[in-house]
Image (cartoon, rainbow, N blue to C red; front, top):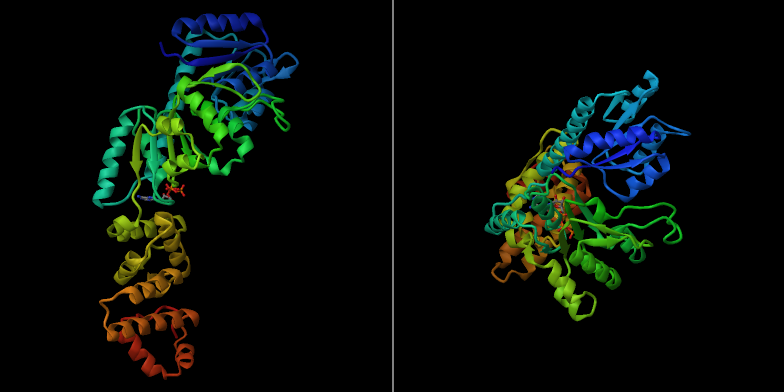
Length: 452
Ligand SMILES: Nc1ncnc2c1ncn2[C@@H]1O[C@H](COP(=O)(O)OP(=O)(O)OP(=O)(O)O)[C@@H](O)[C@H]1O
């Protein structure tokens, strides 16, 4: 049984009946509607794999219904049917993005083939967008901790259990969730990502479970929640520690029963969702402070995965930098820039509190502001300054080495301050230009393109 859901919208009851009679024996579940407004509320309430809509619906129009669907981001593909529509109207439906148009009276085989092609096309579209997503969501790193992480991902992807991804901010928790989804049997369906900290507390329930029209002030239409959008796919709840306690109870109920009630409704809707969650906060500490429900913690933490900080795998920094240079230059239509080897030493010594996200931003800044060959002076100041702090803390450093290091850092800072203008730098340091050039050679500071 293929169990695909089809919505038929036609104001002639006999057409609805005859389409139902052809589709049901083929394993389709068919819902019929005689009016556009009823059809629209069905589409808001439930997910359909295909909608078959008549262009002329008594007083209303199938094309208007389709426009309403587009404005609500209802992604159900539409096949239009009509016995008396003009060529112009047929062309209009296709232009708006309908999958196909069939003229009435149609033969059963033609309808069945069109539905099957439409379903195949949808499947292909999801695959292509997943593949595109997979390309952008490659987890880079050759450190053994990354090999371990990739192995864990491939194992959990084969199961359907809840996974809790922990790790500092910017370590790639969202990428891990994408990988788990893409490698799982749910990859032909949606991965819905929700950042719980970005939704106001009083709207979380309606965002997750949906609401019906009039459920609260401002609820002027029915709305599907993230759970229903993720039906048959994966729901990734990022920053789950920020979810209020009352919503945590509702979430637990839904996870245990696989059923939900929209806010303001007593109708029960079945959902089939795999849950992934992430937090950079320590959930055990949150439980102790009474901020997170212990029973929910056990429900979402069936398998824990830890995303390592960049500090723990600093040997991966040069590889990440090269990759980011390639993608950022390509994205901005620039020739690929090169980078000095000693930049990697400096970048590897920094603590990276914002992890890979901070590294990505730093490289982006260096590319935008720097020349064709990136050198130490292109590295953002706060990262350079951290080197001074490290030097001060380094008990192995001799006075001579410390003085050399300070001198080098000071020269770089001045060069940046005067945009590489050597005459100005020499003047500010109260030495002559020849002396300054000698110092630069001695410290291996290369001439930047904007030097004089
Ligand atoms: N191993 C990696 N390889 C390539 N890119 C990575 C890697 N880890 C993280 N990134 C990139 O770093 C950025 C931040 O990653 P992501 O959003 O997944 O982190 P996060 O842990 O979910 O952060 P937060 O806790 O703030 O939500 C993204 O642009 C992501 O593509």
